[in-house]
Length: 56
Image (cartoon, rainbow, N blue to C red):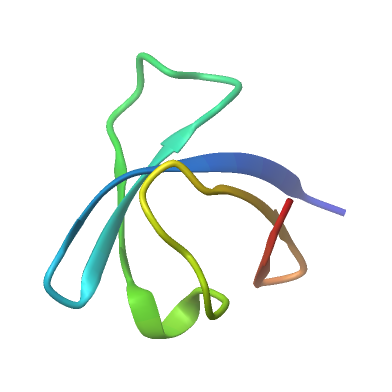
């Protein structure tokens, strides 16, 4: 199983930018807010596994 932890660094309109917690020097992931759980905000840590995100 593939899993990662991300932190939301900023939100612009309907999109969020996620930083990989294990590789902070890599480019941020650009993702639609609709794919993230309700309550996601800047600074939220997300756990990604099996194509789903959940708030940690």
